[in-house]
Image (cartoon, rainbow over all chains, first blue to last red):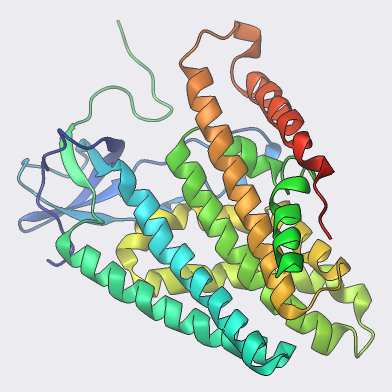
Length: 167
Length: 193
């Protein structure tokens, strides 16, 4: 399966950002995991509609696959991690590259034609080129498994909203 | 060139979206518990604001003003923001489903972020050319992302210290934000035009 990284990377020299996920399906030698919902800030009465408190539909779109070399079964909770710089790198590829290309395209359009129309056309062309470049780069990183989370260990302790039963 | 630089410095630092105009405070307080999430949110918001600013400028210049539909400006711009967020979500999912899994969590938060609509309306108010309005939007986004990252770093440091029980959580966060706003007031003497 492309884009599925081998588990247990050598994280000794790089900081890993951890998160907890639940196994929702086992598919041959791979498992599908769903991240556990993060708690919202809870700072307002719209917490029920808050995008951070993801509903089941949104969580389903964030399912990801891992190689099942840790004997995972449905409902198992595991800790997965991504390298600390990965989110920054992914954000840069997905957003900064197309944005920069759009600005450069707009500048070129403005410079060549000296009109707003030229700047608009240049910006659109730049955006399309930037998105294409971002897609190619993302595909290359995904194939290497650089964008995928890695299995770290099994998760113990209460689930979100659960209790620590000490009795 | 000088005009563009002053415009961008003014938008990013002197009239910072969060600390000077007090927009986007919900995401500012809610997503800045960790630097990684703050940076991700900042970049996603930057993309949406810039594309929305470009689209809103075009609609203002070629639709709202010529047909005297200024009273629809707020509604139209809200629709533009919602469409831009959907466009971003669709594009990121098509470009890389893996990236969407990592970044998609931030996108719904941007739709209701008042900083996005605020920047669009301020942009129109300034009556800039298309390219200058894009520069203004990009600079505002840079200021927003910068403040988000700074505040996330401060909050991470505060979390490692012993805070009195009554001040733990949002109270010490707001006190820290107000001190950061005071620091940014030091930029207020810089000319912006």
